[in-house]
Image 1 (tube, rainbow, N blue to C red):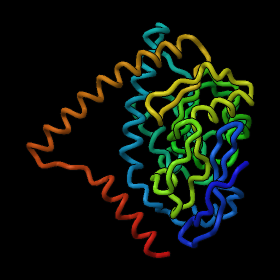
Image 2: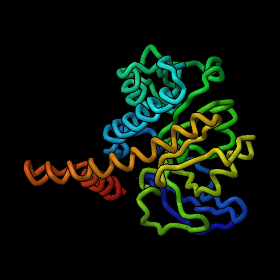
Image 3: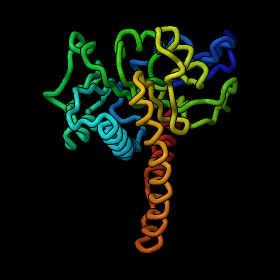
Length: 270
């Protein structure tokens, strides 16, 4: 392990070492004893929470529909969203007819009640999602062992670094002032963590740098490959539509500017 930087995290300026493992390429904050401080505020300047869940739900629904066509099936089994927060994603999925449940040890999951899964029932569900969670946990292998387990599909997000690279301290994904992001993966460290727990790393696929899937079966892999093509086509259409609406109605999203404003407020309180 090599210490790359000494950094201040949370608005309380708690000191931590940004560590890098040369063997597995894992980048992480050492000994995150400040997490109780990081999560005590209900708002952590995450202004993209709603738009991100809408984005992920639309992508997941398309992926699931393609799988159903390949599988020649309209029935769909139970699914579980790990680290669901207040439950926006499973609520959106249930609104479309998919049997999604939620699990979160640190949230009341108010939007998904009473569709909450206990620890005992978790291992029985073979389709799981987990968005904006991996970067919050100190040990991905432990999370895979205790929460993900034996699945046919695990769809998740985390923003990947380039292999062997340590981003500058101004990288927005660090978000040191909030202190909730503590693990920063590359595709190498991600696959090593999965392999350590017995998953085939050759069945991990990505769409861009943030959306990833472990697909155990051939049909789930084929569905993901087809979904990636359609997602890319849709992205071009969405960009075109966004430009047109901006020209006609002068619409411009405030999500990013609100995030910067909120983050600066936290920084100024230090």
